[in-house]
Image (cartoon, rainbow, N blue to C red; front, side):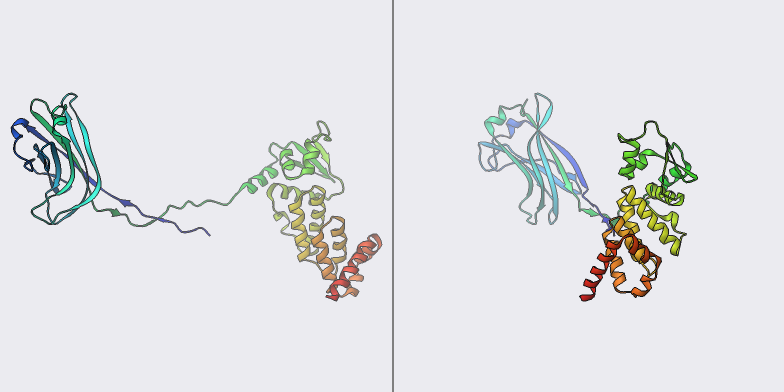
Length: 352
């Protein structure tokens, strides 16, 4: 049974925004003192206010400059990431100096800030860099705010109805239509057209006869001896469709007789699956009138399971009734060793 399968999706929407904080007259900002800063105007990203702080004399050391990106809102929790960049005045392109992976920010103290990012550089290196030209620097900050994840409604996975295999039906129609048939069989007074490749695929005996070194050169018409036309027709039907539906209308003795002949045909053409199907059918339909004849058939065609079923049936039935059948007379006359073996096995069964 196929397992039920459902799907749902978790979608995280983001809001992204950038702000450029241009600082001119850098040299005039020097000397403000350690811990003194200039702050950008507030800018909004993702429904929250942010600002950039720049410390020209450093935040904790006068040998460094410091830049901070702050969340201005109080009493909230914000999931965000950032990319802090400086404009390279030589190339005109901004260069990332520090990136912050997504993290949760919150601040409930009105005297402090929740900083998403911070960056520092030795003052001498900064002032010699291309970030400072004509007494100006430009700080760009890209902020990405992650909104509350949204989970979609659970849905069933799409199901595709796959029809059952119809290759047997197509092959059955091919047999019936005789289209592209390349071999004809004469069985009694009847003829049957077929396809050599299909026969060879299903029976190693047909394969040897039609494609092997012993095949008759150019032979397209082959006689089938010692087989009735209706049996060969059922055999062909099974070869093409892997079923015995063609004999579904047969009942009783007629069906039993057909099954016995098909077992012989299956053995003749080395079609093991058909042989086992016939063997199983005969095992399930043994009776007093047919068991002796079926035992002889089982011995002749090496059907061990059918043979054992016949012996077991005989050991549990009235031997007087079985002995009175023509099948028993034929078995006694033509296959005495089989009958002796059957009696030995019956004796062993009765002693258990």
